[in-house]
Length: 215
Image (cartoon, rainbow, N blue to C red; front, side, top):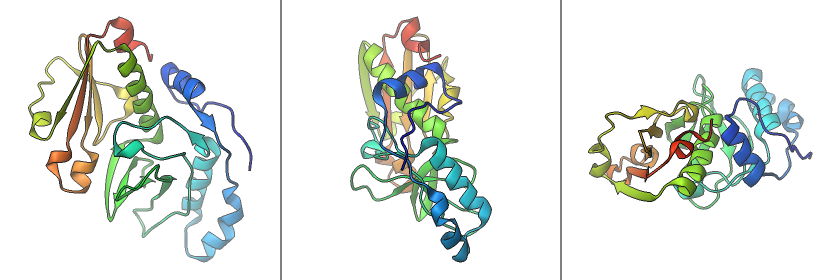
């Protein structure tokens, strides 16, 4: 086991700062030791390569909890890939507490929820990390915070808002307006077919730094 104290590439300056300030590395696992056994069980080498590469970059990184999904993964770490082809997934990290789904990396590198069905939240693990960083930033900078649930989320007027590209939003998205940020969470609602679980958080009263400070 080794400790990785660096910050992964490909993040905004704000997310890099967030990891340096709030993240810590608990230790990475040498997944190469499992390669032969996994291959003997029929797991393709390309899928083993994916999880090994993920562990080398992200393995052991612990970050503050998400306000949803009961906090998200406790730490980021890879585990044995699960098929069948072509929809191979592997664990993104163990659950922080009991939830009825796993946090997984999908066949295209997406980060999402898996419980029989697959709901990708962000197009990449970087998007999940960026969303955590943006949540921390918005909480500290907003003058007011409002939470909407269920049908109220669909009634949101996003005219004049633009998606925040850094979070690589798929089912979950972030939107930037003139003086506010809006986070929309639909993952649990889609996975569990429970529209009441839709949630949006509006962070209002942001100055220019509040809106764009993550860079």
